[in-house]
Length: 268
Image 1 (cartoon, helix red, strand yellow):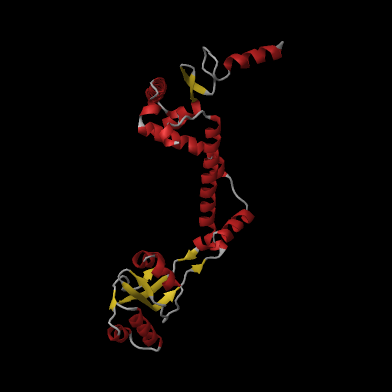
Image 2: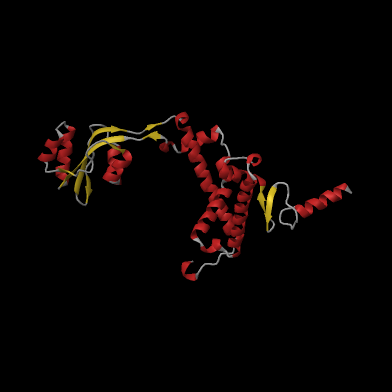
């Protein structure tokens, strides 16, 4: 008989059922939607810096009224389907669902083996940035560029070789630059030549729309890879971020599979 009574109590006090008393774990029900006691205590602490035992009746009532007001407006927003029309609400809703879907990826602690495997697969991310000091010369003809390259390789001063073969400095690089900045200034093709040059090296001529380019490397300090222990914190962050992206993509796929999505003919 006691078991039947307990089962009946659980049935009629379960979430989603209509009840006329407030469960012990809540402080209020608003249209049967609970306001959790834990949330109330946290809001009381945030608002007044006191716990429940030290809060005045007025402080408790004010916090509770504010939480009831919020719940009423949230429920009304659902009735009006505000989330479907308000861009800010839609964005916040999407963000909340993404965070829920990715919660495990964010909180789980990967093993050292998994992190080391990830580290080895993305070794290029974990290195001290390279630095180069290079000059970009441009010549009117390929023969002039080849002549300047030979002179520089033989030890001729940069200004002498440039003047003798009617070249000019483009000014794209004038001092030491990190690799990422040099790539922006030189462009992809010239940077690929530059990063392979040793200090004192001269590139092969490269024809571009404005003439024939020649690179002279004053000093090149390639990126220095970090040891796993030095990069572990960043590896962990990157590992989790990648896992979040994969998890979110999988969740999106699951939602698309179960949804009935109709697309206009001109966009198929």
